[in-house]
Length: 281
Image 1 (cartoon, helix red, strand yellow):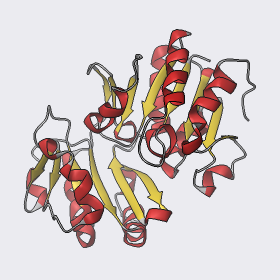
Image 2 (cartoon, rainbow, N blue to C red):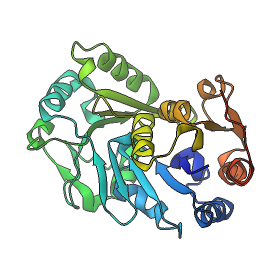
Image 3 (tube, rainbow, N blue to C red):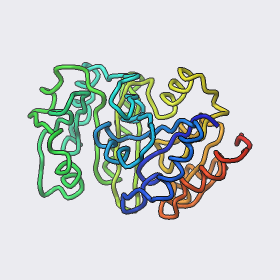
Image 4 (cartoon, rainbow, N blue to C red):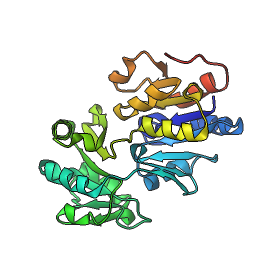
């Protein structure tokens, strides 16, 4: 094994969004053995970095559901932006879900995440945005922020309206000009949709990075728990799903490890990376 790809939320972090010591130790040992570790997440780079900084090992950061690949130190390796004319059409298409819309840019700090309004009474989203205020900007209407190509257009909200938004996005006449990454937490009644460049997904970007590194898919292990991890798991020679994963991922018959509260990542790394393991067909 030469490359381990790890989802963050629901996988690397426990249900309290803490990094278990066993996971940190397993990653350190993998790095000591010369295995590259990549955090592959829907998070933005700056929101993934507080997790990365807790790991005293080199890391590759595949963020924004594959739209951006950057080193832990901040060097950009690959970037696939969403054309702003497509972003403009997306915002027009999705006006019924505008209260949960954001446009995300690759900028040094200010105005990375552009919102139309920041509502303190919005308990679902305000807690996240309030922890990232240095990156937040406002634009009303939201379309006016599109002065350059963004990384993505993002929607979040309760599961039912997000399913409606997803249906509208998949049924649009220009749906072939963008890709969708959907993450759903049924127990919390919360879902997110990232609209990204059409060639991007966690899986396609992991494959692109592996090819650049000269790593065969048989030498890759991936661990995930949610819908947006599907392509990443399908690419990996050793796909591992968390016991707490959505049922759809378990249906593929891939390897299963413990839950995120049981340090399932550490168990999988110890079992598959530190000894010989057969690929999962």
